[in-house]
Length: 74
Ligand code: SF4
Image (cartoon, rainbow, N blue to C red; front, side, top):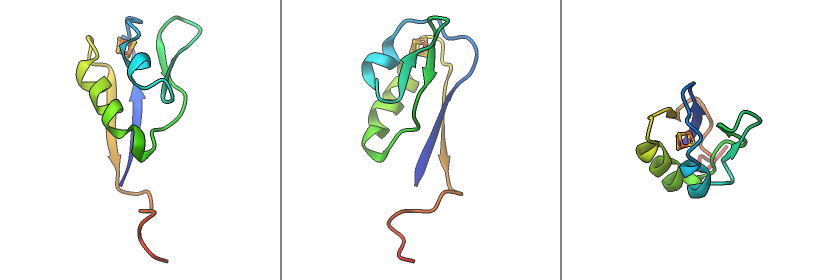
């Protein structure tokens, strides 16, 4: 199952998520974090850690059941 991550307004730019998972999170032009790429399976733990540890709790992680499971044979 794939996951979808987003950041709701309120980021304080601490950089924690970016240090944990820079392939998914980067600073945007306003010095707040933004999602630059949806996480792959390999990024799952780092993204969950970032969401759990974000000091203002603005990282949202959703499982995406609508996405096809790549392990399912056609
Ligand atoms: S951990 Fe939270 S507050 Fe810190 S940069 Fe990431 S989204 Fe912003």
